[in-house]
Amino acid sequence: MNFFNLLKSLDELLYEVMSWLIFYPVTLWQGLTRPLKMMDYSDAEQGDAEEKQYTDTLSPPLFLLLTLVISHALELSTVGESAIVADKTGLGGLVNDDTTYILMRVAFFSLFPLVMAARLVRARHVKLDRVPLKAPFYSQCYVAAPFALMVSGASILLQLKPLAAGIAGLVLLALALLWFGSLQILWFAQHLRISRWRAALHASRAMVEALVLFVLFSLIVT
Image 1: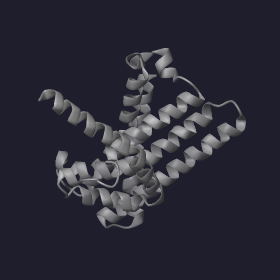
Image 2 (image 1 turned 90 degrees about the horizontal axis):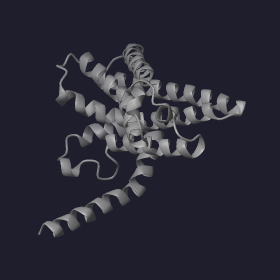
Image 3 (image 1 turned 180 degrees about the horizontal axis):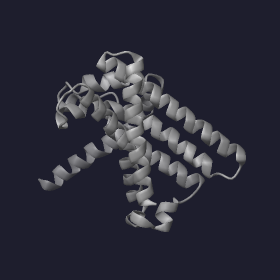
């Protein structure tokens, strides 16, 4: 009986993994072309039963994770092994292979959804705990993934030799920050029902907090 249960589990796992080939591009396209609607969609899905959630897309955290795996694969194919994995300096000594490096990057980019979600909960004057934090965190993952992909692409370009590639990397990084920041202003304005100027203050504060944590984390592991 255990053997047949194992076969059934493998069957379900194979189907789930292969379905990513369809649903990842769909989720990425929707995340890039209609990010705010995807965030609203995530909020709505949180009200469904667990087995009925995200049936036509990838779940937000999985989407972020797969995006970082793909971006790391692109980095390996273009610029080679990361210096963090190769040098093993500081806490980076704990990052001794590609798996731990990907997990570190997941932690890096998950800071943005976490800080944005926490700022929204605090702005609503709601007690900060797991329940009110989950829905905004999940919705934020839908825009954090394309943002991470753009930042990773910029990082790759900055590591390439031609000057034009470095300039393109800086432009892509600026566009990524502008895109992500603009979405945050619209998101805070929509959910807090405030003006875009006040929403910009919330978004700016959360962005600064996330970037500070991001930089501190980077300095620790390098």
